Image (tube, rainbow, N blue to C red; front, side):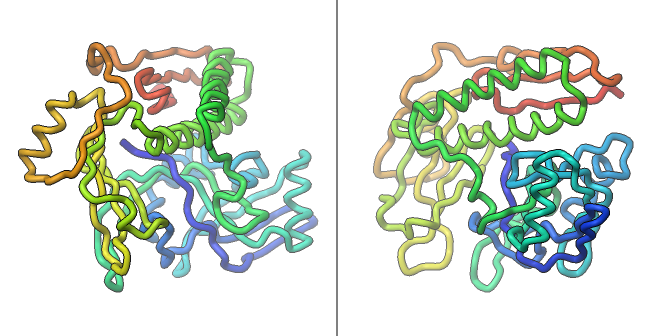
Amino acid sequence: MRNFKYGPPCKFELKDLDLKDRIVKAYYFNAQTIDSDNDIISIDAYSKSITERGPKSEWPRVKHLFNHWDGAGKILELGKDEKGGWFISKLGRHTVGKDTLLMYEDGIITEHSHGFEPVNTDNETIDGMEVRRIKEAILWEVTSLDKWGANMHTPVIKSMEDRNCWTKRIENLIKAFSSGKYSDETFELLEIQLKQIQELVRQYDMEAKPYKGWHSARVIEPDKFQSDSFRRKEITDGIIAIMGRLIGETTMTIQAYRFDVNKFTVAEAKKWLKDHDVKYIRFEPAEEEPKQRATSHEAGRQLTLPKTDGYNRIQTINKSLNYEGIKIYRPS
C-alpha cells in the first residue's frame, strides 16, 4: 500500500522572485537529503509523474500549496538540476496567494517541501545507515513553508476525539466530490486534502493500543530503542514491520510485526511468524476482528460522480480502511 507523505524541508535559496509578476522559482526537494524516515529521493524520482501530470501535460494536476494545505499559485514549470527538483509558480491574486507573495518579500518563507506517494523503492546503505531510496513517486504538490520543518502546520491526531473529527472531514470531502459543483481545480485540491487526512488517521491507528485493525507481535521491548528512530516498512501485503535503532546503534532493527485483520486471523498471523522463524515476546490481537473478511470485490465500492468540465471522476472507496485508497480516474 502506498502512503502519502511529505518530503523534508528544502533549505536551498530561492532561485528567483519577481514581485511585479508574482513569479517564484524555488527548490522543493534536495536529492542529497535523508529525511527523518530514512528516505532519500532520487533525482529522477518524479520524471514520469511530471510528464504525466505536470504543468505541460494534457491534464496538469501538481499543485502549489501554502503549508501543504491552501492553494497558493499555479505551477508553470517543474524541473531539476544537480541540486534537486525546482518549480516555477505564478502566485494567485486571492488572499492566500497575496499573503504568500508578501511573506516571500519579507523573508518569512525560507523553505519549501512537497507531498508525494512512493511507487518504486529500494533499500541501500549510505555511510553505514540503512535507507530507503525512492526511485519513482507520484508528485502531488509543492509547498511554501513559513515555519521550520515540513510538518509544522500539519494537523496532529492526539485523541480518539480528534480522529472522529477528521473522519467526519473525510465524509464531508466524499460528499463534496459527489455534489459535482466544484471546478476541476478545487476538486484536485480537495483530493490532496483527503490523502493528507487519510494518512493522519492511518498514523494514529497504527500507534493506538490495542491496535485497531492490526494484530501485533512484539519482538523487542520499545524502551530498548532510540525514541525518535521508529519507522514502518511494508514486508508484504497485509504485514508491516516496526523498525528502529537500538540504543547506541546506527542500523535499523525490527521491533514488532503488525498484521492487517482483513488479511490475517490471529492463527494465520502466528503461523506466518512460525514459518518465518520469528521469535516474539508478546502477541497482541487487534482490538476487534471483522466477523467476515471482505473479498476484493466487497472491500470497496465504486462511485461515479457527476461530470465536471468534461471529466467523470470514479472513486473506489475502501470502507474497511476508513476510505483509504481513494483513486480518481480520468476516462481514456
